[in-house]
Length: 119
Image (cartoon, rainbow, N blue to C red; front, side, top):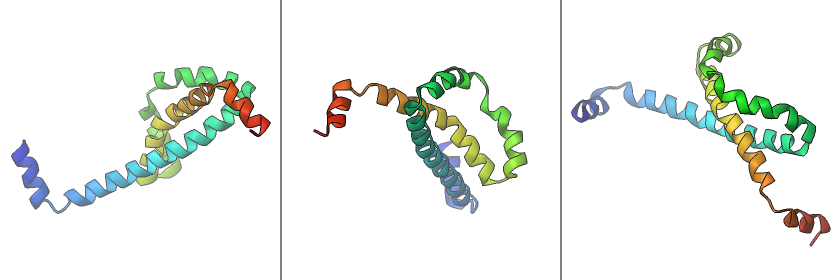
């Protein structure tokens, strides 16, 4: 297998273009997940009612296979990198939202009081 991999890397002209395509889609999906999840997590944490409403959705989100949405994404974004990037971002955005809300919850209250007092 290693010999075949070295052969493909050395001789196949399509290999590096496919790797570049995949890594650029991956980088875009990661950027969307991190930035979008962080901003949405801040918003969800700031509005307690919204958080209580969304907690069951966040809890059950991973029970639904995300690939089920792929045909719908193809309808909206077409066949190409956009639908792949959105699908990849869907995998990570909820995890980022939950991680952001959890991280903000773990900030000691005394630090928030110090910040509020301007000290």
